[in-house]
Picture 1 (cartoon, rainbow, N blue to C red):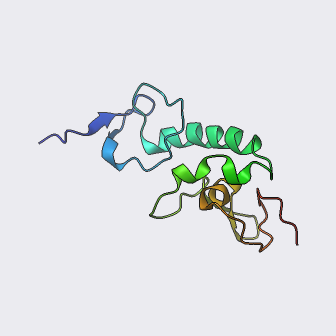
Picture 2 (picture 1 turned 30 degrees about the horizontal axis):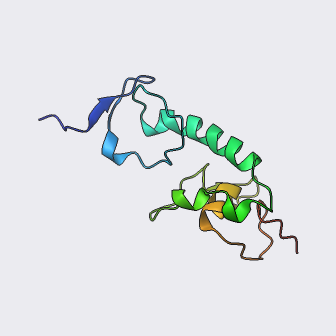
Length: 114
């Protein structure tokens, strides 16, 4: 039985369930189907462009909060592990959170420096 939301990734050729894609839907997205693994680098590049345009003065009003979601954090988008194995939140995650915690986060987009 075929799942209605099943697609074939145009990049890697693997079947995937469209309803299980759990990446932010920044625009523009590719029009041909991409699985999560193939879509992630595209979304990551879009996020990097978005975050590069944010200043401490625009961080609260940049619109990133609309991409906040419940569920597990996404490695490489919301966090990464640095070479020492430390868990580091990205500016993207901090922008989606919508406020500065004043803990001196490495990638604080709000301009806080301890």
